[in-house]
Image (tube, rainbow, N blue to C red; front, side, top):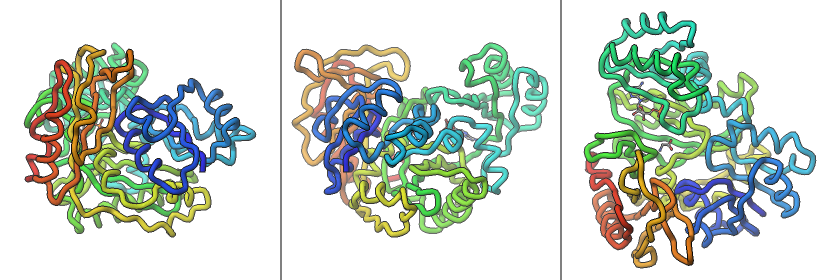
Length: 422
Ligand code: AMP
Ligand code: GLY
């Protein structure tokens, strides 16, 4: 099988690692990739769907695996399905209609409502209905959750502590385009008090394979304080995701989502990421993502002991029910090494040392590049270190030991990943 993977972050590094391991993988290309991914496949830079399509034809690509959400929301699956010479390529990632589950919060909330999928009570507003929006806020209890409808690079959710602040945020989002076009509509929803976790499936539109669950640590500061980030670390499994809880997730959320898509004739193939809140043992959907999570993937795929390409290859004929998934019973812990200042301003181009000195750890590159023969920082989240061990404490200990061996100027990481669950 010849495979092209799109993306350049920690999530794609984790996908690349398991794709490279498969005995079914022949030629493996990654666009654009990063220096750490060169050990898994050939990194090339392809810009635009046309170029990607031409490359796929020239290199007889059988499978396109799409890491991030943007190309999916922009319709890369539709482009491949509608282009002569590309139609037979299996795209792992949903079409544009299905990708609205992530691309539009209003679409996803309406979808959940239609299919009786537990989620926070909500209403959607636009520039013409700001005043109604303020009235709706008055019916809720603090804190107030406001979400830009469209993609906003993970920044489009505002949690306001009091009513005045919430009203001001609403005005800024709708009237001052705080998040550009993404906030031309705003979803206001009830605040759910609970503990978050991430659940993932790979689906062919009819059947699905449940992947290991994970917990992501989103805030920049210790003790879940400070600004929201793309994710500072993750662990898998998650002890509060008991069999009973996961059964509720399956029956109330996953089954209803897959069946809902089928009922609405929306074909979905690829990963679905359910961002969940566990409220007193009951799962509620906070958000859908139409891709894997980052840094959840780093932990999830570290525990993945089966052949991912085999699963991908069963998708086209909707035979995913034949797939036998094997998951390591060990615990995976991932800690992100970030550039000091992230998620706000930070410097780039710092030389990274010690990348080869880790022991029994997976070192995923997230934001790096090669410069004058050296690997340097090129993003806010720079390196994800993942370790597997028996139990959370041992996995974390191993991870933090290894992190000490990697250095760059102004390295920052959270020291309390997983501690809340020990
Ligand atoms: P999202 O981008 O939708 O994942 O939202 C970002 C973060 O906001 C989530 O990870 C939650 O921590 C928080 N959040 C979103 N919606 C709610 C809600 N209804 N209740 C409580 N927290 C929420
Ligand atoms: N870790 C959260 C996300 O990937 O959206």
